[in-house]
Amino acid sequence: MTDVLESMRRIFVPIHKEGYPFILIALFATLVLAWLWSPLGWIGTILTVWVCYFFRDPPRVTPVREGLVVSPADGRVNLITTAVPPAELDLPPEPMTRISVFMNVFDCHVNRAPVTGRITQILYTPGLFLNAELDKASEDNERNALVIETANTKIGVVQIAGLVARRIVSFVKVGNHLSTGERFGLIRFGSRLDIFVPLNAQVLVGLGQTAVAGETVLADLTANEPAREYRVG
Image 1 (cartoon, helix red, strand yellow):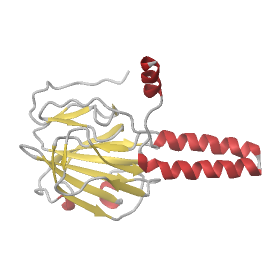
Image 2 (image 1 turned 60 degrees about the vertical axis):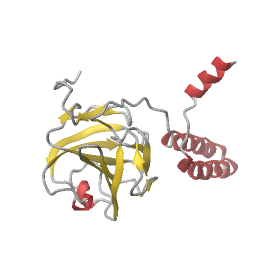
Image 3 (image 1 turned 180 degrees about the vertical axis):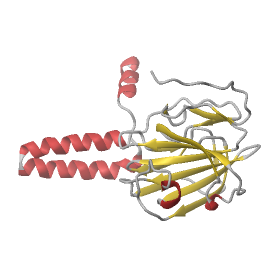
Image 4 (image 1 turned 30 degrees about the vertical axis):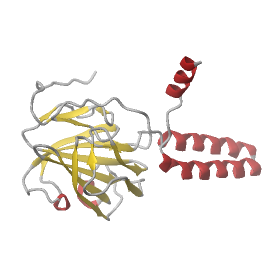
């Protein structure tokens, strides 16, 4: 019996509590549509299933070695570049390595801490809702910026709303201590995260790579990992 329950638990991925109101709305809409015309009820059912899927919150296995920076988001690594961090992060106005992870509407949108440390800065900035894949979205779009102070440095994380996203949800406050992989927020529906790390950090992902929040290692602050090469198969 225990094995059966464990198998069921693995099949049915947990849903984050932020999704419950949207699921209830979708269910109600489905009942109304089914009452009006049964084929519409099937459309509502598909929509409800998608809402449940969007707000899924699966457990993750997080590497915990000191110096590792893990992905805060599920999605595709769509940009690795050198850039001065946004002024709201209150970091030194010097270039850092920026790694961007783009989340489409089918990715899990629960965001997780890339490193272990204390939150020293949180600043919400209203803005536009441009396509989050565009580089200028980092400056023009609505966003929520965090700074996490680790033992030896500070890491910047920016949640950026996208073309469809209209709500950035934060679970944390300044002064909170986060462990690597711990949940700190989510974005509804489709968006991007920018991660700023020191220039001397060894980047361990490639453009186009699929990242898994709390699991995929983006960079090594201690440069203990060997350099990696990538190919598209």
